[in-house]
Amino acid sequence: MGARAIMAAPVAGGNAPWRGAVDVEGGLLRLTVAGEGPPLILLHGWTLDARMWQPQMADLARDFTLIMPDRRGFGRSSAPPALMREGEDIARIADVLKLDRFSLLGLSQGASVALDTAVMMAGRIDALVVCGAPLPALVERHETLDLAHYQALAAAGDLAAMRADWAQHPLMQACTPAAAEALAVMLADYEGHDLARPSALPDLTRTDAASLAMPLLALAGEHDTPWRRACAAALTAAVPHGSFALVEGAGHVANLDNPARFDALVREFLQAAVLQGPPS
Image (cartoon, rainbow, N blue to C red; front, side):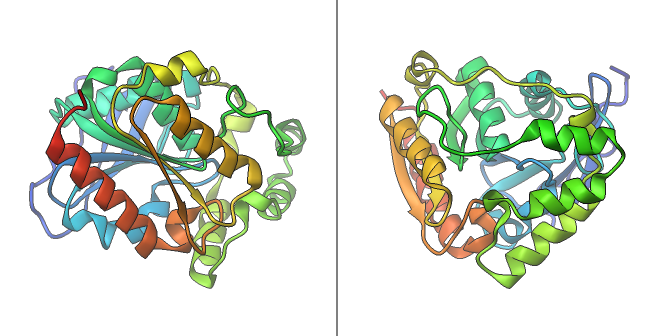
């Protein structure tokens, strides 16, 4: 990695969000930093980017420093897709921003990355929030996501068809007009880099889950798929210090569908976890 670690230093307590980049293996990760308080790194879902956290910038940033990267292969980041490297990316972001400890929040594929990172570097993570995590090693999969079909469409140069097909998937169904518009805008900008260079993370096992000693909040939208809701409940039971909540009036992308309830659940959990310190 080059000598330029970050484009500019964020200003603590500034009113405007700071936007810059961190160099990682293969390129740059673009990120936005907003707010003031205990640091919270937020990881977006598949085909989306850091813009999905705009409602949280308007609320959670009052109490936390929100650090929102475009994950490698997505958004404005130039680093190539590689799910197995994303834990290293998070460590790099934390190191550059001089964060000894931080909390993690991930949604969907971002939740998988958050869990993988927590297994890798549990000693630096104060608390973990995951929403809509796919956990096939904990709950038998009862959900269809035909990645091979999407990869074939992308390989044929028909990203428009891929986006249109994915937009109809249950995981992309919004419960409010504002959420639907936000999803449509981000999906229109999705370029399919990860479909051309597929990668995977190891499934979180029960042994992995049992090793996660930090407080963990497993969320799911009330109208998310039955399998995703079951995964959240199973994860809660599998970790030593787990709690579970449904986000009322929300689908898979619960932070966009019902940001007020999502933010309230996250705030209450993180304030208790960070103030109380590590569980004994």
